[in-house]
Structure formats: structure tokens, C-alpha cells
Amino acid sequence: MRVRKVIIMTEFLPLGSIVLLKGGMQKILIIARALKVRNGNEEYFFDYGGVTYPEGLVGDQMAYFNADKINEVVFEG
Image (cartoon, rainbow, N blue to C red):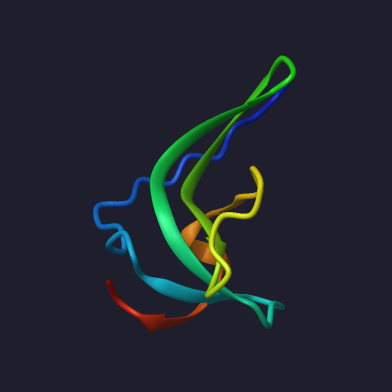
């Protein structure tokens, strides 16, 4: 039996915000919100999608993360 944890957020950071994730040193620029990502037959839900800052989108590499993984908001876009 698979149990899903659901957290309802009422506010998102604006697109263009820059954050540092817990345990990370690279700044992340938020470019997407409220994502559903499919990996094989599994679906995952994320609050945010982002790219490294200032590099931007390199290939198809995007970081998916939830609000509870944000350590610091560097800039609110």
C-alpha cells in the first residue's frame, strides 16, 4: 500500500525568485511552480522547478523541489 503525503500551499514564491536549498551551495532560479513529473509509471508532485543561477537552463537539467527544502530566499522575483 502506497501512502501519499499531501501538503496544501496557499502561496508560492514568484517566478524569478532565487533560493538556496538545504544542504546546497548553488543558487537556484525558480522557473516553474506546481509541477507533476512522470518518471516511468510513477508520478511525482513538486512545488517548484528551477535552474542553476546564473548559468540558467543547461540542456534539459531542471531541479525539482518542494518548499520545505528551501533554506533561504536570496531574492524574491
